[in-house]
Length: 211
Image (cartoon, rainbow, N blue to C red; front, side, top):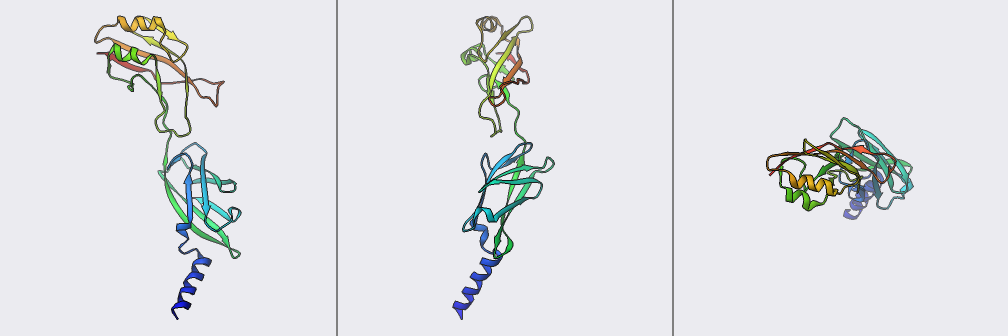
């Protein structure tokens, strides 16, 4: 009798998807979240089920299969989380296999920094030691690198421009001549993304007081 009962439970599991949650893997490729206004690559696999028999839906937004186990998900803009549900064709029926909830985030806007700072007090030695500006990408797994194409140093008297991320000799002289308490602004900062080399983007100015 026990053997018959075990066989019955196994049969139900196979035909209805019970216990199948553990056999599903729903994995965003870039992060553990899905990002607004981005095509988020997602891997979906169901153990023991061919990829062409697997499909998925998302609670808010769109999800499309590219090929095999590769999907792309775009969450809606007005939610903080979405649920991806996975289905499989079994014995001529479409059965829900499992689901998983993911937080929805906005990607960060890159910002310029010096010695890890973008405002506040800073010494001349800290500035010069960096040799130029750097970029903090923040929470943006879709961008690995950006190029600073220009920026200006403004001590409220002179404004001098660099056509790269590095300080020019003239900029260094101005920085070294500044007194404690003076305001220094790094302005007109432009960046370029490797995948969009024909376009430049402005970043916010950063302000400091010489300490």
